[in-house]
Image (cartoon, rainbow, N blue to C red; front, side, top):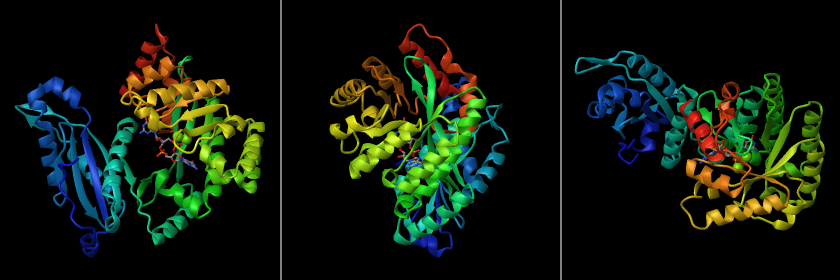
Length: 428
Ligand code: C2E
Ligand code: MG
Ligand code: MG
């Protein structure tokens, strides 16, 4: 990414009446096939051809080749959704094949982008969101754009007002990330992760609006919306033969909110949906007495309690023992560094043993590599979740994923089988 041409100052952009900045990553989706067709040397020319044509379609953009398969474009626009129009134009322009040494070559592209108000750009967040969007686009088979939302005081208030309306207008959407049971080689549950389909900013990620929802007391309404949606989705899944438990993230402040607890229980009690709640340890430490009492109420309603991000915050063994939790999720910080650090494998192993001693199942989140998966399997980890298996996806994609049933393919040994499962998902 460091070869990217700079965009220039944000204030200038506002002065020219173009208050939004965009970072679009364009990837050659069929590079592997084309390399087979053309050979390595000629395939290496493809990124240059793509960047030239992008430059012609978007003459004001700064276009940079950032690898054999990726091209980055930076540009400005007057509306937050200006990128959509450019993607349509690029898609159209690339329908026309290239001619390379008398051979006709059709290049298929994947688009991932990020947008942000030009006056207030966090460069790193912008690049990270564009990369995350591209990764999502690879499995979603469509262009994905994320919005980077700044957080000044007035932005927070505006965002809160918009979020308030977004809940009523059903602009929120749940993406589901499966959790796979290692020994059973089965997807037994999935986690619901909320996103906001903002009418002009594109897809806003939870870290950009959950803090605002918490600060502006919208988190209860948002979470009740999430529970309602998950109940409907769980019913839909069960009707299609996939009776998975769906886990919802519950913010710490809600564990002491009696009105929320009452309404959440009324929703869950009035349905036969199989749900779980993910809570962090830190949320219990805030007001342990009411949190533990309310978690017990949830558990009595048949809701499975999972402790999220274990190890990331303040851990207290005293509370851990008192929680009616059935699952412990090891924070992805330990999992992503599992194979590169000396200390993290020890922490993960002892956490797995501790959770088992407390009769909890262990979920490792953030499993990104086969090496981490293999190590976790040997350590006795019960469930895994992470990009290696699947990114969070919309409900229809989850259903398709389950319908294909590739994870049920029998394997000669658990490690090989699981590796095969993960590999087949990545190709899908
Ligand atoms: P979380 O509950 O710990 O969710 C896991 C986050 O890690 C998700 O980010 C997920 O996309 C990401 N992730 C999953 N697998 C991998 C992996 O292999 N590698 C890496 N690097 N990351 C992975 P996301 O969706 O951006 O959510 C961020 C956080 O926002 C969540 O963390 C959760 O705390 C919060 N959140 C999401 N949805 C809700 C919600 O409905 N209510 C509340 N209160 N919080 C939510
Ligand atoms: Mg979670
Ligand atoms: Mg987590």
